[in-house]
Image 1 (tube, helix red, strand yellow):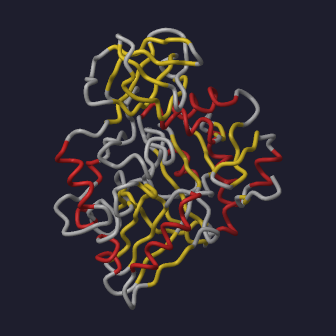
Image 2 (cartoon, rainbow, N blue to C red; image 1 turned 45 degrees about the vertical axis):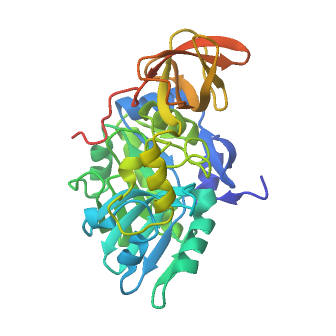
Image 3 (cartoon, one colour; image 1 turned 180 degrees about the vertical axis):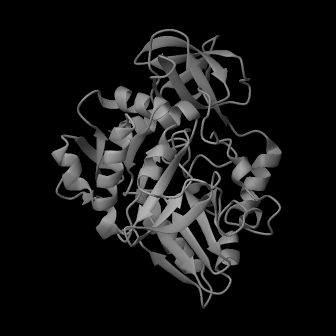
Amino acid sequence: MTDLLHSPLHDRHVALGAKMADFGGWSMPIEYPGGGVVAEHTAVRTKVGLFDVSHLGKARVSGPGAAEFVNTCFTNDLRRIEPGKAQYTMCCTADGGVVDDLIQYLRSDEDVFLIPNAANTGRVVEMLEAAAPEGIVVEDLHDRYGVLAVQGPRSDEVLARLGLPTEHGYMSFVETEWQGQPVIVCRTGYTGERGYEIVPAWEVTGSVWDALAEAVAAEGGLPAGLGARDTLRTEMGYPLHGNDLSLDITPVMAGAAWAVGWDKETFWGKEVLAEQRAAKTAPLMRGLVVGGRGIPRAHCAVKDITGNSVGEVTSGTFSPTRKQGVALALLDRSVSLGDEVVVDVRGRDVAATVTKPPFVEAGVRGS
């Protein structure tokens, strides 16, 4: 892994015996000893887990009219939120393909902080730089900040042990200090549980991790790797770029039209996406719950009960919560919710029911 980038916590993960793997060009922990993915997943659903997601990108757009400029680029409408709030959005090409999905944090009309996906940060920054008018500054801050995610029903107790704020609402953030160092505490996450993402400076991320790890252990939780992060997000039906969103899978197809500001005058890809939305012919993302044994994986073919091809799995996993296979799949519009279909899992037909995610009850907004 000599060519892979390292998070500021790399040595700590290695010392813990984590299984490391390439994730978006970064060497990141997939799971830790002592139970692996299922134990870490269960800790997040029932107590609390701590994730290193410092591989995620960080960028900033600043200057007079920065928020207005960003709003002409990405799909969602920044006018829907106020400073101190965060918003899920997508960066699309002119033909509607998704370059990346990301979170945009509105600091002020002149300052927007962005967290794109690791592998796509450079492209998103390039597109913003190419479009930015004079006076707008676009900065790639990928290695300036770490990102730590505390997720699970005991997240508030963990943050309270560090004296960090927990009173702000879902999809909002507070800029504060911990031991004299600035940190951003965001009420966001990718697991479907109540939780926070903490953004410290790169050089102090280790100290913050150590304090959070101690607090998480005191609450009966575990450090968690990206394996559990994937099973958790799949149970919620949250998309993963490269699987459920891509240059070939538009927001309309992915069922993410709710994150598009259709009334905005312009944004990248608007014309094509509006036409696709009106035509109602493109395939749609649906959920699949497997009835018997078998774990659907990305690219597994999906057929109707007569054997006709009706689509393909984009993300699939064994759900530790439900104890059965679940998946997201891009399906023809001829398929309806409640229909029975068949998934080709390594040459074996596995029955599944078409449903609407999430596959488990969401706790993200809960107290």
